[in-house]
Length: 50
Image (cartoon, rainbow, N blue to C red; front, side):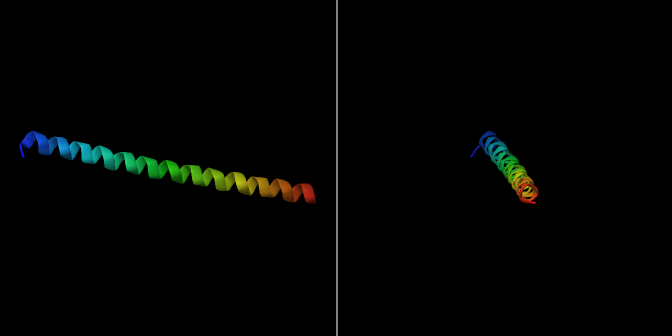
């Protein structure tokens, strides 16, 4: 393999890994938001029952 191909492959690999990290962080934020919304809905229902 030529040096150019190796450098190109390394860049593609780094971009793929960076994209995965951003996706995992995004899913984490979405999950946290869903939990917060569920807890808020539970508190609203609890207040309505009382």
